[in-house]
Length: 152
Image 1 (spheres, rainbow, N blue to C red):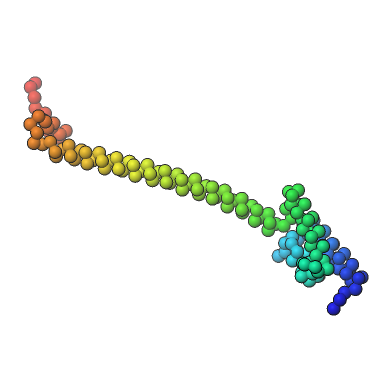
Image 2 (cartoon, rainbow, N blue to C red; image 1 turned 45 degrees about the vertical axis):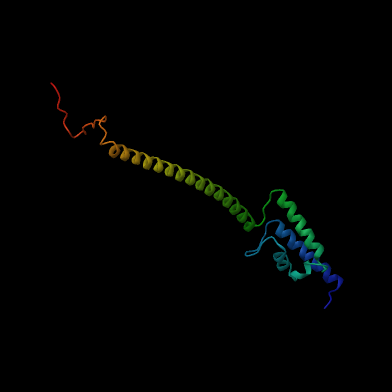
């Protein structure tokens, strides 16, 4: 069923009034600052805002005004503000996690190097202790437990 010119003007006025309310931040609960909420608030079918439908120019106007407000730094929709805040927090956490992973990798590498050095030193000590017991030129020193007896 086609609408009359008077009905169309009346619908456009309702849409513009709803548009002004949304852009002032008067967003109904469960809604957002979007075409779906605009159509619902104006009592018009949402599909009338798309393609070559009668109110497509009002959708373009609404999106343009919304973009201008967003460029000016105004955030009308609390959901959008929360999403932006969470995106910023996620980026911060990703950077923190990357830094922590980098630090963990550096510490793991340092620990592995230290363990390798300790193992090599232990092997060298074992080799020195057992390898030269038969050499005549090497004198074994007494351990700290043995008492050294010498001239007094």
